[in-house]
Image 1 (tube, helix red, strand yellow):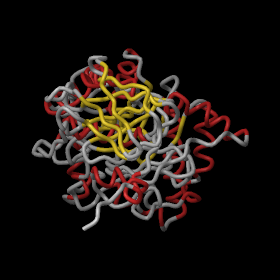
Image 2 (spheres, rainbow, N blue to C red):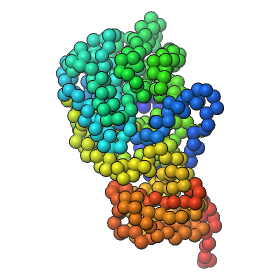
Image 3 (tube, one colour):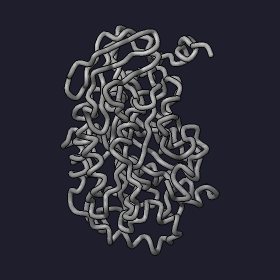
Image 4 (cartoon, rainbow, N blue to C red):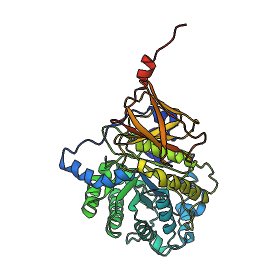
Amino acid sequence: MNNLFTRRTWLKSSASLLAAGALTPRTAQTQAPQPAQPPASAPQDADRARRMQWWHEARFGMFVHWGLYSVLGRHEWVMENEGIPVSEYAPLAKKFQPTPHAARAWARLAKQAGQKYMVMTTKHHEGFCNFNTKLTDYCAPKQGPGRDLVAEYVEAARSEGLRVGFYYSLMDWHHPDGARCAQDEDARKRFVEYTHGLIRELMTNYGKVDVLWYDVAWPLSADQWESERMNKMVFELQPDIIVNNRNKLPGDFSTPEQHITAETNGRAWETCMTLNDSWGYQRADDAWKTPKQVIRNLVACTRDTGNYLLNIGPKPDGSIPEESVRILSEVGHWMDRNGPTIYGSDPCQVRRSNYASFTRKGNTLYMHVHFWPGETVALSGLMTGVKGARLLASDRKVQVQQDKFRVRFTGLPVEAPDHPVATIAIECESEPTQDSILVRKEKPRDGI
């Protein structure tokens, strides 16, 4: 992100977050292969596998950042980055008057884009609650919206058959104990009980919740937040939920932000990323990702059995920025044809190409060609025999030539047969693997 202070800044000491910036294609190709989720060896592992099965199959979700910062349209960290005092910022709560049921358009777009779940900000760092609560008047039903925005979101997501996730920021710039809790024990106790109380309401008042996405545990430790007790309450109220790692406990999955870095030892992970450089609505931010970039990121996550949580930042009235709609609609058209290569896919060891990336299901290797070279597509070091291949978009069979060092797919159309990424489905004799170093070492060399 372009702003100086982001939630990643607060979390930069976390092992789950590395340097900022989306992974480049070259880096994506050289990440070490990741093993599959190991078999459950304890009751808690078996329960986690049960709870997370749908999530592993889903691969692709929508993040939604929406709050009072949307009214200003200058990024979700505007309150802190511009030093706006609470007395000046809090009146935005009366000006925040979104169109009723704006979330229905979000859910329709998510479904069209091929996303299987949504995660919405219930409370961001600004401290404003988008849900109905008995613990503060600084909430949507008692301010400008005059209604429960989280309830509208839940109804919208469920109506489109999408799983429901709640984002909740532990950090709070509005609450009087939000900073002094680090030095004042009485303030800490008050603030922790307030926080646990809000989470209890979220886990109680909206039916089944599929994901709880904590954020920014500043300024307290896991012990000070009483995070073990917090999670125990969450699981008692929502036994099927999955929880991330940002209340300073390991949780069920890791959350690399704005970069793609696979976890090791089978640990679940989800890259969250913006469509431009802002999470919340920023009217002047025109640094939009292309649909091709989004698809390549999704493939990179999928290859190593990770998920991709892609953000929209609705305008203050709840409408979706036009560029977000355009990009996700084009991604959705691609997913209509290529979704089976993404959902429920297996770990993929094959990764080396300067114009393609890969996913796998069983013995079928999917070669996603983002820079179409023309009549011939080639892959070096494939250690598995190829039985046949076809263009996924048209189901047209492809001619195959294979030797020890490469496999070539020939007689292809000069122009890419799909947009913005064309996929070749390669049926292999066994699980496909690749050894490019073998090619480098053993391919015959001529004399000089």
